[in-house]
Image (cartoon, rainbow, N blue to C red; front, side, top):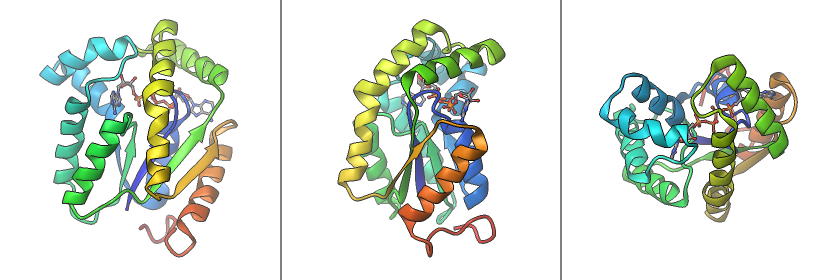
Length: 202
Ligand code: B4P
């Protein structure tokens, strides 16, 4: 099973991904986390990505595709994977479809979180005060919202048009409330026989 968690910056992707991963026994692959770790280690990739991320821009597609491709190829065949923060452009979505086709796999579901932009900005400014992430400045947040609207939002239509089940979820509310909605939306999108919660994995 390959799933995607999709939504604008601050919509709770990372937060809900860790719950879905636990519920469905999936490996979690977050491109944002991988990039932050590369930046922290000052690797060549990290040096290339640091300035781009701090400005709120998207890292080049070819760099991201190589990062995800190498990790997917290293995954044991049949492992369920939840992709978080990828794909973020139509080009990345097409690259992912091609990578998965080579492995005889495909995207099985998308969970799309919906949260109004004013609330997203408040959440990210709150996180800035708590965690001090380099890309949570007001200016970078505005740029991330712009990139999301211009380049990432169309990715959802790419999957709708290719017939992948899309579970759309209202992401406003406390974490448990949102996760209850995610679980119900996934059951509807996948159908009860394919949705095997914590007891069975996928
Ligand atoms: P990400 O790490 O994916 O950052 P994000 O979009 O802000 O999502 P994140 O997971 O951190 O936040 P979440 O919504 O969970 O990417 C960071 C940067 O890396 C990008 O801007 C880009 O530069 C680069 N990048 C990553 N992937 C890329 C790709 N594929 N292509 C190109 N570039 C790429 O949560 C945000 C906050 O809200 C948290 O503090 C959380 O506690 C809070 N929150 C969550 N749910 C809540 C709720 N229900 N109520 C209240 N608060 C909540």
